[in-house]
Length: 356
Image 1 (cartoon, rainbow, N blue to C red):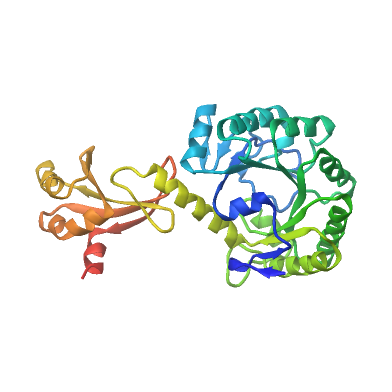
Image 2: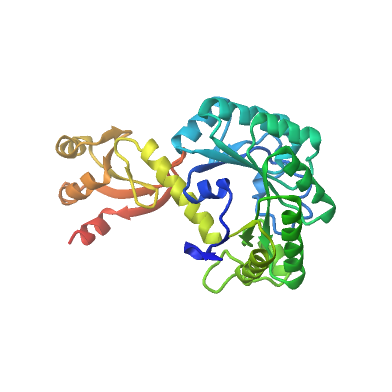
């Protein structure tokens, strides 16, 4: 078993989808908010505001209104593939077909597409649609052994097939995952992915009610989840020939950061600077226009709505002069997303102190 950064574990490699996700090279396509199993999955992480919205389509953090905005978002992130999720994607197979065909035609056959399913909508017709569209990889998520035969069916179509499940602490859950790993091996599937069980706003009350607690060193990961995953993967390594991977909660955050790094360099405006964390940062100066023009003529920037927006490095160079002119100034750090959500604000006085 291979020990990876951030507590991840890997046995005999991983799927191509996981390889691209690790690099931040995958976008996430949330293709519908509909799913008939919201009431039965106590650990579901989908936000309440997304649930039940059948026409809701989101790529990464951006709501998609048309095909052009989908293509634009993929290009902004320099993505080499997408992971299709929901809701349950297989209850809208024609929509999946439309979007996968669009992406494959625009970015080429090597643009990798993996799809998550709880198996509800999987039958031969749905698999034919997914195959004809160009879906490369299917990840099943179901504890119901009666539905595992659909995994065998997907393997017969020629997809890369595996299961992706939460690692839930407890002997019963671990025995079920061990049983699943054996079934995957038996039917010729490729992998079993285990995700660290996470606390989210949508499942927190359920998990606490069941006696689960956050890890001591983390407010997101569930205590005992990583240990359970290790035990399952030890069995998988010893008794099967499939690949196994454990993805900790911190790895999900790392993937987002890696994707942000790719996006930030593509969408940064003239006055925004990408950071090593994948965010964008810029300076904002406000005050009388004649004084702002003094700073603008000397240090450059972008004058907008009574404010001067500047590159962070220029703002820092101008900080003493901004103070001397009696102007208000601050550095603003934002997400590299369409809405530029503010993450942190650094007042002028803080910048002056940090520069000595």
